Amino acid sequence: MRPSSPSYIADFDSATGMLRATSNYLHGQDYPGLGKGHAMGRIVQAANWLPQAAREEVYAVGGVTEGHAPDKLDQVDAEKVAEWITARYPKRRYQAVMVGSASGALTHLSAAFDIPWLPQTFFIPVRHLTGDNDDPKKAMEFGRRYAPKLLEANPDLQLHHMHDANQDRLMVEYMDYFRVKRLTLGRAYERFLEANLEPGGTIIVTECGSSWPTTRIGERHFFQHGALGGATEEEFHHGSERVEEYLERYDAPVRRWDSPEPDGRSPEAEWGFEAALRDDILRFAAQHGYQVKRLIYDEPDSLSPMVADFYRDWNRERGLKANRVLVESFIMLEPYWALRTGSVPFWMKFNMNPSVDAIESYLDSREPFDEINLMLFNNGVEGVGFPQIDRWRQVLERARRQGQFIGVSEELHPRDFGSLGRYYLETRQKIKARYPLPGPLPLARLTDYMERHGERYDVELLAA
Image 1 (tube, rainbow, N blue to C red):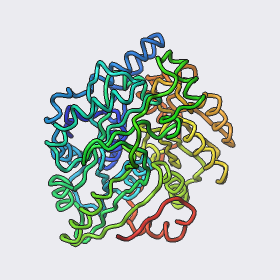
Image 2 (image 1 turned 180 degrees about the vertical axis):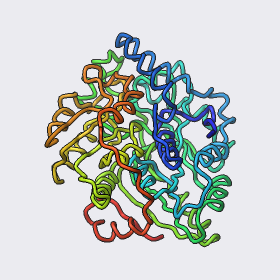
Image 3 (image 1 turned 180 degrees about the horizontal axis):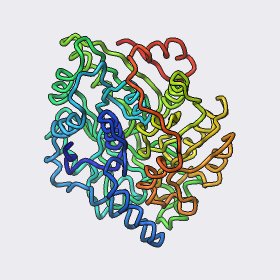
């Protein structure tokens, strides 16, 4: 049985979810209930029976129950987190291991090549019951007060304190988002690589170039107001008509956020890559005779077109029609069932306008699909840049034969919290095709694909 995560690590987060999906697949398993199993899926589906306000409160309170006490942040141990991460993977030799930024598209590369992914970033939710989701300066001062304990106890971590009252409005009412990035591999990651990476094997550094305006609080401490999604950097820092309308609709006490003045740019808190880790990987690889490749991409979903096209070609080689696309959303993804159903996976980072733009752009530029199956993550908020359900229906209408939602209640979105369990059941029920799992591909297939087709994508695969 795989160990439980440390109590101070968020369960429902990009890095945690993608780690669970990847490690489950390498164990030959699927990803029910966001990796928490069928029981969790049934519990969250029961929330849909509640009125809207009650559903939102349950969602927010559910988040704060994960929150760590701010005066106990010195209990956070980055090495214990790394030990939990590495313990999730089967103990066997791998041709390669990925280390670095998160992206749902990476889970499908892991599945194709049977290789683990070790995240650089993880999320510590910190309880802040007297917080104000529309006061980023108050949030910043909260971090200034409590972060030193965390950073003193973990000298190899860099803190990116993120405050997003747009997409995370329900959550930031009761907690603050402390995202931390590893600056070094550390003992647990090094031990895992030494024990499980083939002699002369490859470490693939996954480097998302996404950045954001930040305010430096300390040597290893940055405050980030806003995040990737529907609202722009400018809107978070200076407001707009869209922001005014949003804040008025949610009966906020302000009509624009009083943002701290940024004094630089930093790797985006959730997705961006901190280059200090690459330097340490190069040191470690040189000492142990490993190769290093850099997988470089601008945004977390920049990988999605490349991975989808790679899978479409591979499915044709498997003798499949490659006419079915599975559109995934944030941590609602299924690498196991994508392969079992012969689907082409296309991962979207969230449920906002940039994500619907991304899938529309992809479908515009590719041979049509007979089937389009679409998941949507529910965060409970109709924020700035939120597309209404009709626009997602238009995506489904592009299918030549059948377009359908997977795990989505159209009437309740984005407050359909039951979708967090239902996406898995409906993937199995609504997509009828079944194929054997293929064996892992040699890593040279990825190198060859990028040499032949890399110019099509905003992605680079470089030898370090």
